[in-house]
Amino acid sequence: MVESQIKQGACQLSSHHPNCGLFTAFFVFGEIIACFAFGKAMRLLLIDNSNTRTKFAVTAPGQDGYDVQHVATRELEPTFIEKLQALEFDASVISSVVPEKAALLREGLAARPLHEISHQSTLSIGIDYPHPEQIGADRLANAVAVHARIGAPAIVVDFGTAVTFDVVGGSGPEARYLGGVIAPGLASMTDYLHQNTALLPEIDLAEPESAIGKSTTEAMRSGAVYGYRGMIREVLQAIQRELDAVPTVLATGGDATLIADGLPEVSEVIADFTLEGIRLIGERNLP
Image 1 (cartoon, helix red, strand yellow):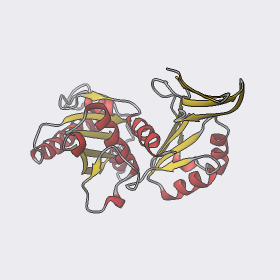
Image 2 (cartoon, rainbow, N blue to C red):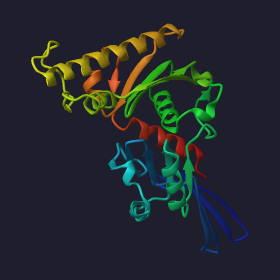
Image 3 (cartoon, rainbow, N blue to C red):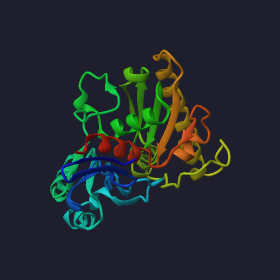
Image 4 (cartoon, rainbow, N blue to C red):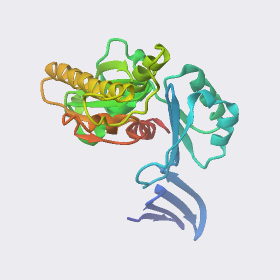
């Protein structure tokens, strides 16, 4: 759509570009003197800084999915942040649960617009939580992402270093983050057994061949996978008893596919779901 106004030899031309959004150009006697773009779609550097791994991706306007890279969080140092600075992006959005690393990211990326997610961010949902400053940024991102995708009530189960259950209740404009549950992650439990016993080995997590293990490794794997599914199911049932309607359950995170495969309560497993929430919050809060 093109709109124009002409007055005494001057012309104002307004239009919409698929990548730049609304722009207005000013002409005097056929010569362009100024051009302004409003609501330009930006390339965003999305950063999900968790305890074990830090994921990052650059999202472009109209792009489907994310080309996700990751680094061990302990390796997130100034030399690595210099590599991030070299990427092509207009602004960055940070979700961090590691204060020391968040400070490095803020300092290293400060040359361009930046938003760090917190309870003070402008969100698409409300927050019903007595101390919102205690909510992890990744949990807010998950809540925003699930509300954008399916509405409420909904639960996101995020399988990471810890497994988190984040609950969105209400509906429409009354949708709000209600809180959730935090439990040890699956790898944390199996690693603890290996590190604190003399004879139990470190195991690779996979679907057990049977519930009755015929070796130490098989017995540990059966206990980890079946036991963890039982914990997830029990927590979901406890949450559901406190809600007014049956929630839709989505899962994300490293062990989501393995564990959710035996849980019909989980409707869908979505990779990089936290990054989607980070993007949505960034778009709402960046100038």
